[in-house]
Length: 154
Image 1 (cartoon, rainbow, N blue to C red):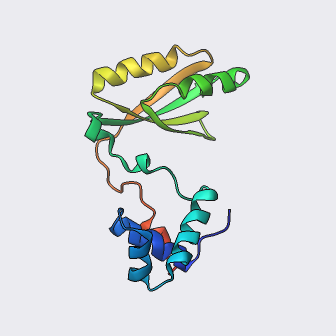
Image 2 (cartoon, rainbow, N blue to C red):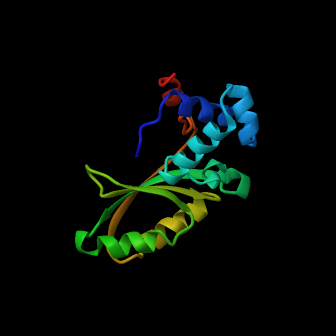
């Protein structure tokens, strides 16, 4: 992946301010040729630097009021099958292989604590999952963001 530069950062920050802005609108705002903006956005998409728009969605808008992190310990011999089965659960919105006490860290959403209980029970029923440790999020102190990182490129 080609590292982002100042122009990429300016384009992305402008899209943060106005997500529905057209390529022409961005070009005018940034005083850059439309073809340049178009090429930059295409490169960012092709390289995987831009993720799908649905990642911007707040799950609370769909009734998933509760956010939690679930640390999982897994049987290493069943890792691939366990991850494949975990990926089938739509409430797991993000998952990472980690070092430390656990093997996987899942970011999950639920409608309420009962739903979270049912979800963690479903997770524990998956072959290869040995145990879980769940932490409920009480408040978003610093929501997921990239803007401050982008500003360091300016």
